[in-house]
Length: 410
Image (cartoon, rainbow, N blue to C red; front, side):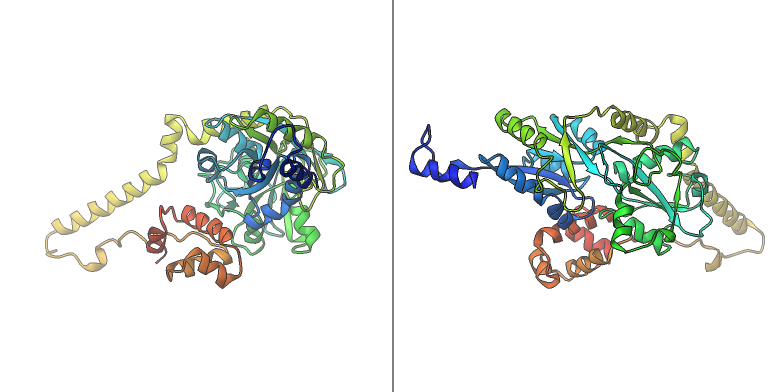
């Protein structure tokens, strides 16, 4: 209504300065981390978009779903004015992109209370014999992404404190990508022994009836008793709402005021749980964790790098042993040939990444030469959703183009 009234005033020429229909309302784009998938992000934050549309009538707001990998390029490409993501992702992005936090999210938890803090939950299948963090040794662990904050790094720190290196001490560490529900599915179906998810997600899944609490064992839940949702880690500040440095100060201030006044609005919710926005909290805990992760994982010491090379050293040593044995056989008197059985097999084929049902469907269509629009028509989903899954497929196969993706998937 406010937007329509403002436009009518402009068109009638009653405003303080002349204006036209196209300049009356400008676009403002909010990048939102789609950790449960593209479509979920649009539904989850639609109420906030409508609230800001009504509260800031000079602008119309657009939701721009993003992944952990795509956000930086979207910001650099001018596709985002505001940012709504987890604190670890915010810390990473702020290294390369100047931005300021306008407000911090407060979320209604499972017992009805609101909290500006969250953590991670570490799960295993019930009756699997996995009861403690130390049981992760030689097990398969599933998470979202190496750079996921609530979906991996919070739990990484707890395992690290328990003297478990998730990268070297487990049987395998599998990063499945968004949506995060897939981690729960993998644990429930036995594809993974242990899963790492954001706190609050399990409560939602249990409330929907997809699984029951008795299906799982929850690890390290004695870490804190001050939070209503199940936790396996310490608490960290909730998601920030940030503005990029190039946002007009008047728009930035208007959005800040709107967010801080959104508490009683039924519009400004996340689609499932009530939330509101408070003045920004300190994000030092997130910064400390990111620095620890970078020190231990991304930039390890020379000794740690050497330790990480032991599997490769063992393979090389085994290869040299085989070569030496073959050489001795050739030189042995009476041995004038080498049988085919003595020749070591060539390197095994590249392991295929794990795909969701939807990703497998889209990959099949891509290999058949279908465009995103054609795939969307076949699956009755939006082209943007197809592009979201295509981006995940490129990342999982480490491919730079659809052509390379098809070649790797063949």
